[in-house]
Amino acid sequence: MLAAVMDRYGPPDVVRVAEVARPRPRADEVLVRVRAAAVTSADSRIRGARFPAGFGVPARLAFGIVRPRRPTLGSSFAGVVEHVGSRVGDFAAGDEVCGMTGVKLGAHAEYVAVRADRLARKPAEVTHEEAAGLLFGGTTALFFLRDKAGVGPGTSVLVNGASGAVGTNAVQLARHFGATVTAVTSAANTELVTKLGADRVVDYADDGLGATSERFDAVLDVVGNLSIASGRRLLSAKGVLLLAVASLVDTIRARGNVVAGASPERVADFDLLLRLAADGEIVVVLDQIHDLEHIVDAHRRVDTGHKVGNIVVRP
Image (cartoon, rainbow, N blue to C red; front, side, top):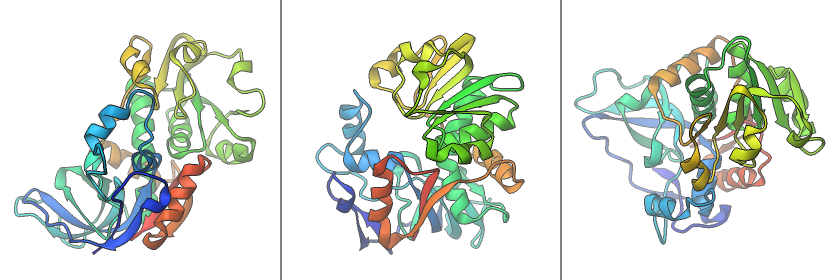
């Protein structure tokens, strides 16, 4: 099969498309013919060995000290079941599914083997490209806003970095939960985030967060430019600071009204997000769609830091 592989860390052109062995699913796994996979900021960080401050050593231990331990990136995907393991009873060949592979990665390929309990059924109303682009940012936004901040009717939410993969989902989910949403983004993306449900937009290049006197019940930072101190200054009396991107020091120090760390990948969350997308409650924002042979272009776009929503490749 064809897969995007890399044998060293570096810029986008360290990734190349090559013929590799097709994975053989274990008894509890499903072999999926990948139709679409997201190329995310996490893929970019791993490829370039660029991690939030303090995470360099543990990340290298996880992904490979000298060279990548997992040559094929990609975690969020959608496709069609090709084969099921002997202990899998919930899926059959031909089923349309989507999911996330976690630290195992491997989705930037024609086929990926995934544990059956990490898969969700893809609704017919949601395309493969939309499903792959939804899960990475959607699960993070859902975890922080719903599970950690309890966002609901009458609450006020600030989303710092509202036009990216996490941010576009966060704006919509906060609106869906009944919150009032302030979005921080560039002027070029004002119309987009307003359509997604933002009640107010702050241009980060203009007045920025330093100029606002408003206080919020939840502040979600998906950029990584808020410290605990600067973020807490934006909180209401009962507000919660949500650091989706944070240094190792801030992650360790996060307690009380500060939450940091990785979000879980749960099938129940996949199902909820997919239902919302199928019902038109949230829109999946896709910046670009590439064939796998143009994976380098996808990485280059991610590296600009200006992608809107997510980028998807089609193996």
